[in-house]
Length: 352
Image 1: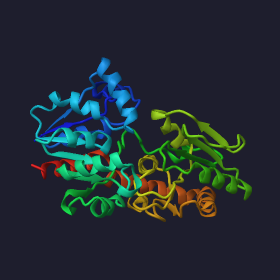
Image 2 (image 1 turned 180 degrees about the vertical axis):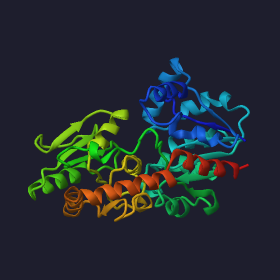
Image 3 (image 1 turned 30 degrees about the vertical axis):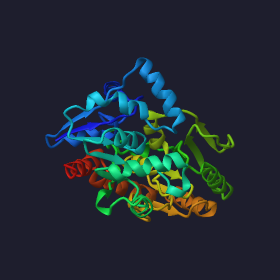
């Protein structure tokens, strides 16, 4: 089987490999998709067009809420010889589905809302694209019934797939490397599902109750964090995240209610690093964070519950360390990029 991966225009797989070799980013290829070839299948990646085409693609993409319409057309020649087209999410997946009727297309769905929640043109395009899909997958269990029931995708073509990360890039951090005071809480995230206001309020509540909690938050979103309570890293941290995880005693992820799986990558990075997770209990989060064993799950928007969970783990480092160690084992056994790619490979084979 020859799988051709449709990458966004801004992703150059060769540049990605060089950055990985320098230790800047995880996995040898985006999402570790080269592992789809671990059993001998051929995996190729679309390369960016560059020049004027890239300029036009960027302009059109910005007007279409991120959908890669131009790239889907200009990259058609690179698909020759491929048995299956593979797209990690709908931004590349829907254009590929609409522009390549002769090959099966496997597309992930990450951010698609229910039909009644999106604009008319996007709903019509999604309906047409999903009808053509050889297979659809999602890494949030809560999205499976939405795709089947609200978008009428036949159940046999909708697959739940476990998210995976690179455990070598996110090694287990020694518990002794954390902040000597044992009060650092780490968080990261830029997507629309984040609820950093609840996170900050929770850390401030912990401080009010006598624990000098310190928040290190990596985000480019606007946040009101008092300087005495923490620091905001307003940039993409990449490899520097490993230092934040190492210093932390708890990784906390506050989220708005949503079914799309916001926060899952950070949760797995934290667990791989040997740190317990406190996270909003959105649908699907419990697939990745086991309450009471690898972390603690709390209701959305509940400052009291989140502050109590954070405070309990900061006050009990032995319990926190045990949760972190259990989380690392869970990632190694179930949630690596190689595990994810193996599931995706079988889905792709099923479309032939």
